[in-house]
Image (cartoon, rainbow, N blue to C red; front, side):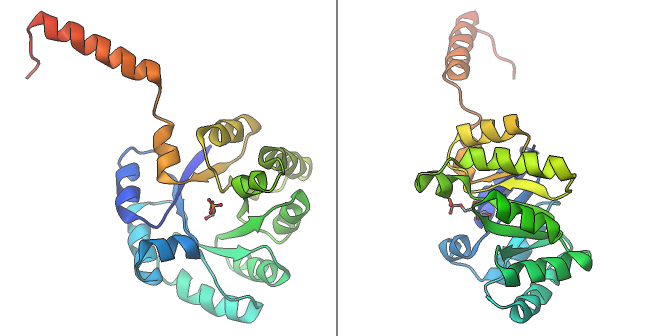
Length: 217
Ligand code: E4P
């Protein structure tokens, strides 16, 4: 499963990229607002930090303007992935861009039928929002299972990008189901490293090492 980080915080991206586990980045207008930075500048900087796809979202609601915004965004770097909402105009834009060889991430997916539409429109990635699904009394991971089943039934190439990931169990379940990608905030990715027995083991080894009176350097 590929790991994307869901942030526009370039310090966090740089830190995670150094671990070698980062396969891409997703942003959205709320994350750009949180960064306090200029959209085009921050996307350009992120594209220089990772080799994989960097999702940058259009904000227009009509196909024509979405295409104009996408034209600006795709000039930033070859690894920009245009993010479009799951609407009729969003999918028209998806079809036009993917036909032209551009990566497209279809976002704000909340049903398996929507995911089916996105795949038929040629989406490179479909982003079902599991956390927001759970928040509203639905089962986010059941949605991922349904999409996996449908995509496998018909051999769609669209990658399932699990989004709105809130905790490590979402990551574990995504991997069990066979999602292609998950995108999570830096804190959730960092939480994956933690285990109480790892901490306890380090403390025990260091205590015994101290008793040997030796140093390595
Ligand atoms: C995905 O691309 C979205 O940016 C993101 O996962 C949304 O997550 P949220 O529901 O925590 O805002």
